[in-house]
Length: 211
Image (cartoon, rainbow, N blue to C red; front, top):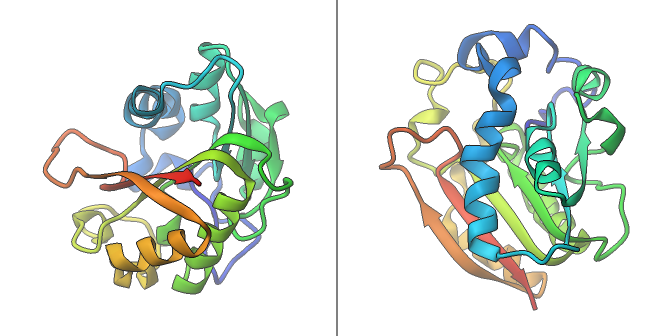
């Protein structure tokens, strides 16, 4: 579920060492369980999708969300910038190279588009462009997870990650709401989960509905 920083768009920094150190020590062993528990199960409970709905995870890393969706019989794809993930993911056949600012799919291609834990690697401008793109390729919903401005996860002491930027820490709820509405969409549900100690997903969840 991770993508690129603005100062290195090759994705090479997200390699095996990255996914095996600091806060990601157990990621390669647990990415599918984490995606199931923290992202997919809550999302499906919120939207109650039909059997024929399609999904896209933009910045899917090793494809944990795709595994969880496939387990339920849903058709899904993922985009990713990390060459390591694109080569080694167990669901790599369903993944393509792409960034959140340039998603390689047509308008309204997927019923539901996911983006989780990506914006902390982007500039504010890239984040706003990403909102445009996520809404563009979605037919029904966008599920967007981001770090809240006051999150401890921005801290290199609490959550070490040398590739994370601080730009989007400046973005407020109103910044997100304004850009979403500029794209003709609305925030159907907004969750703040800063006070849930067991969580590993980012603290703000925007469930965005196309109108």
